Length: 62
Image (tube, rainbow, N blue to C red):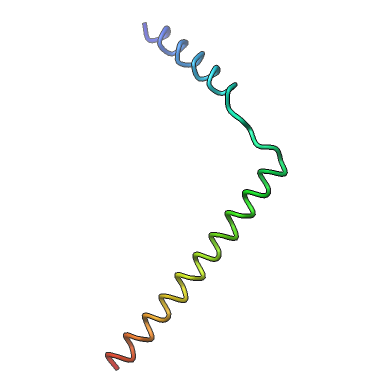
């Protein structure tokens, strides 16, 4: 019975994988670049905010 469920599962996975839209290389590189740039900008924002808060707290607490 377990073999039947496993085989059925793998057939369903195969069907679903054939429906997947795989991106072209150019689209993949573009999306990856955009993700890396957005991540860098967010990290930079968090760093600047952290430094600003640290400076404000240091000023307040001396």
